[in-house]
Structure formats: C-alpha cells, structure tokens
Image (cartoon, rainbow, N blue to C red; front, side):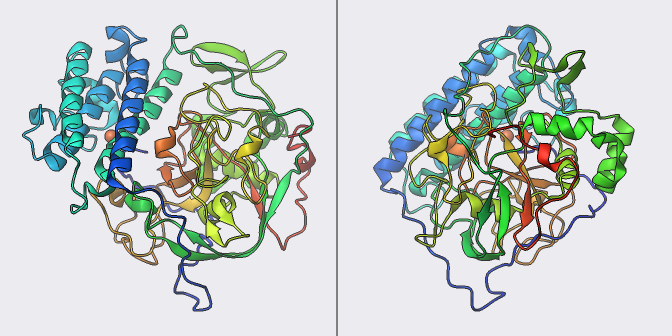
Length: 499
Ligand SMILES: [Fe+2]
C-alpha cells in the first residue's frame, strides 16, 4: 500500500473504467454469496495467532540480517529506514490491539507522532527521533506479548472491531504489507546480498499455453461482504457486467518487454500516455528499474546480486506508464480492475466468485508464488494448480499487476476502521457510488512473490502512483473480444516460445 499522502497529478487521458455498478441495470441478477468462510470464534482466533506469528517471523528475518547502520540508514528517499518500519509496525499494534481492542493504556503511546505515516513523508523520516534498533526490537516484543494476552481473552463477536478477530487480521495484514515494503527497501539497498531463498519452480515439461484466454461476457460478483478480514475498500460485494474480453494467459515476460525496448518503444511518443511521455522525457527512462544493458544482453540487480535478466519470467519493476505504453505498442490495453477480478475469480459453472483463482483453499506453495518463499517471479506458465477457471495463470503471486483503473470506492463504501487506510486516497468528494476515480493512484491486483497470503486474495486492492517502479509490479494485457487480433508490428514477438 502506498503510505504517501495524495498529491495532485493532472487527470490521465485514458478510457473510463468499464465498471458498471449494480443497480444500473435491473436485469443484472443479485450478488451471489461466496461459500462462507469458517467464522467460528475459536477458528478466527487461531488464524489470527498464526498470522501474527508468521508476520513477526518474517519481519525479524528482514531486520536481523543487517547491522545497526544498515537499519538506520535511508537506502532510498522513496523508503523509510528499516528501523522506522519495525517500530511503526509495533506502534500500530500498540494502538489497535492494546488500546482500541484491549482497552489497555498501551506500551508507548508517546511514540504515536514519530510513527504516524501521515505526519512525516518517507523522505523526511531519517530526521525523526526514532528508537534505535535494539530499543525498537524490545518495543515490538513487549507490544506483541500484550497483544497475545488480549487475543487469548477471546475477543467479543458483539463488537465490530473484534468480530471474527478482524482487527487482529488487519494488524497481521498491516505487518505483512510493511514486510513487502521492507523487502523493496532491501532491493533498493546497495551492498552485498543478505537475503537468500531457493529459486521458484519452473514451467512443467510439456506445457503449451495459448497466448491469451477468453473471459466470456456477463455479470459477476465483484468485491466481498463475507470475507471477515477483507478491508474497507474491498467492500461491498456488487454485480458488475463485464463484456467478453481476451486476457494474456500469463503476465508479460521480460523477453517480450525487451522486444518493445529494441523496437524503440521508449523513443516513440505515440505509445505513451501524455503524462507518461513527459515523465520519460524528464527522467530519461530506457528500461525497467534495475536493468542494465551489457554487450551480450540485459542484466539486472536483484537483492545485491547482478545476473542476466530471465527473459521467460514476468517483467518486474515497471511503472504504470511503461505498462500502458507496452500495451498500446502491442495493439492491446491494460485490463480494467473489474476485468482482472472477473478473470481471477468468476466460476461460470456455479456463477459464484471464488476467493482464489483455484477455489477456496488457502494458497499453498503449489498454487502461487507468495510470501517471500522465493526472491523473484517464477517463469511465465508456472503454477498449473493455481490456474483460474478462464485458464489464466499466475494471477495471484509473482508480480503485482497494473490495471487500467483509477483507485476509487465501490458503491456503498464505508471507511472502516480509519479513514487513512483507503478513503484519503480516493479523489476529493468521491466517497460513495458513482465516483469518477483518482488520477493520482492506479490499482494493482494479485500480489507479488513478496506478498503474504494473509494480504492476498482476488478481492484485495493495492494502489500507487503511476510513476512508481520500486514496487514488485508487472502487468498483463487485454483486448475486447469483439476486436480482431492485435496488429502491432512486433506483437508476434511478444511472448517467447511456450510462454
Ligand atoms: Fe503502516
């Protein structure tokens, strides 16, 4: 999630979202509920405990590999010092689990101004009176010990904040979201490699996938009412009629993106959104972030290692502007948010929307590349068991996928439990049905290899500025089903063999 306060950006010249809110067409059937998740209090408490413990193990893994100087340094003005993230995680837990849910005085409420993300932009955080790393560790441990006491007391289902252990799930998601941000800081950091993980699985032998899959037209249920840990911007469930469209079977690969570069993609204004072209001219962009052209091909820097760019894997570290330009060059476009979600969860056999592309089962290592289990995306075409009903693969995990859509509230949106999670990122005056959409933030879907499964589902919405590239973002492209096949000159080279 972006923690950067909104700033004004001129409205982009892109087609409006194709989302048609429910109620616009009385022929659209009512929302079809998803299979109900297990919301028994003891099940929710057990899930909350496991999610909090998994998040903390990951957080400590991200800080224990660096010395004090590495934790207090600012590795990029786009990011906070890692020691700030660590204590901010504890401070949010102090506020929400101890004070709000537990009714306790809290461990260090005096630290709130230091760790309020909205008071101090990331670039200015090194000047804050932060806790030194050792003190930050003690602080988060003390908060956690008390938070588990609050959880043990079987929080009441009568209170909205604690019903189905919502606030515990929210704080586990918050910590994991910061862990992904901290992973991005590790990627920006200069110096020897300190993070290690096995490579992701490859594409099974004999795999032969079509380049695109058809998602039939018709209504589907977007968003959710019944996922107990869904955040406010994922609510409410509503019917959206999405015309038939073709979607790339997998995310666009680095090899396909390299063809765009070699075809002069960064030199040709007609492929670019006007704001994107101005950005390219101003910044001199020539390739994805961390790429470097060598005599014998592209290399990239990845968590302290320099290696050849794997051409058969999804392209990573591209901005929305770059994704949008590539799509136009390929004679296609980015999918809308509604198209992405329909492809990821609509089951034509039942008319229901699934929680995950493969069904209701929690993500396992066989389904998707999530949770920092690996430190890069898997090759395009991996994870056959994670396939969606439409045949698309890798919709969850690997890379966040930029969509064409601006970040805007769903019909009936209600900020909960605090405005600063979503509402302040919507365009002014837009809360409620029929909002236009923010030119400041584009929606990303699906999660990356650095996203934990507690913060990853087909309804989960992420957003960021269209220039951002340090996040683990790629994309896939789409076209309307009533158009002829794309005709751009290099389209045939968009995908390497077998991907
Ligand atoms: Fe935060």
